[in-house]
Amino acid sequence: MNRSAGLLSALYLATSTGLAWTAVLALRQGPPWTACLFAAASLVPVIAVVRESVLQDQRRTLAEMRGRVGGPGGPGAGAADDIVRAELDTACCERWWTSCGTDHDSTCPRRVPRSSAA
Image (cartoon, rainbow, N blue to C red; front, side):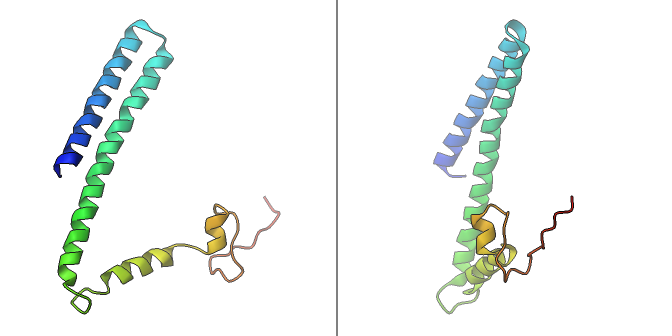
């Protein structure tokens, strides 16, 4: 983890600790719903730390892939194309993306006929 990501993770953890302490204080002296609210809010920075570590792993993997490619005709030159092709193959049609999954193109292989039966 680089210096800025480490600093950001430390800030996230400090924020999470502060929110957890506030949840404890709210549980002792305030209404119970505020303790639940602060306890839930204290989990959000922890999720951010996990996200930072996943992003760091992805950056490291990408750097290794770029190192292996070596040039336009080097070994692994089609690795990025293979990744993009795999991601696009798992996606659906354009209409599905723009309609938030409610409609499909007529040529979509995943098109499921709609019926009025519940």
